[in-house]
Image 1 (cartoon, helix red, strand yellow):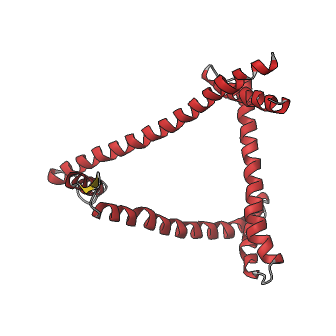
Image 2 (cartoon, rainbow, N blue to C red):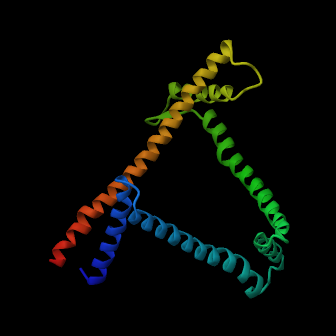
Image 3 (spheres, helix red, strand yellow):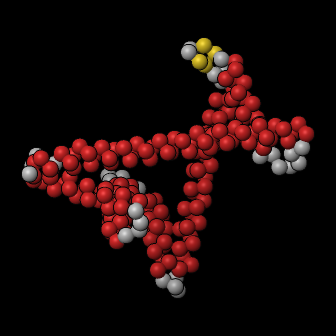
Amino acid sequence: MSGIELFQIWIMAFFTLAIFSFLYKDNPVYRFAEHLYAGASVGYYIGLYWDTVIVQQLWVPLTKSQLPEYWLAIPGIMGLLMFSRLSSKYSWMARIGLAFIMGNTAGVFLLSQLHGNVIGQMQGTMTPQVADGVPNAALTAIVVIGVIATLIYFYFSKEHTGALGVTAKVGIWFIMISFGAHFGYTVMGRISLLIGRVYFLYTDWLGSFSHIF
């Protein structure tokens, strides 16, 4: 193991232990690691957006293409207008670019949600569920009942009483099961990260002592 690799391992171990030190209490070492991580992340994404958006999607097609796409000057100018927020006198100009971004994002998000969630949910509800390669009527019924009961729970035009109230309560159970599954998945992901860091400390960092001493 080279000296550079040892140095990298010890730097990684230092910041890992610095983050873990928050388990004891908030301290300057943890804040230093936190601020450095946040600053490095911001710097990385600034460089990433500059290269992938400003350079590749705006500057190159506008100036270095055989057929310059001059229409890109319009979103470029709107992006520059966002910096007018730095001036109290001309800050109102930022609303032009902001309104365009919000409207465009809302339209794109609406279509993506429609195709990704609504239509996908409808297709998944109407498609027979399969278990071990064989259509399973019980699973299909559970999916259909769960979707209908959940939708009825969010139907607020009528008071949830009688059969409607019972169905809404069934929908609550399906919602809670879904939230629990998502929460469990998130916890498992965080535990996987924790295991990865502990494994690194146990194998790479502690193993590096044999190369030093």
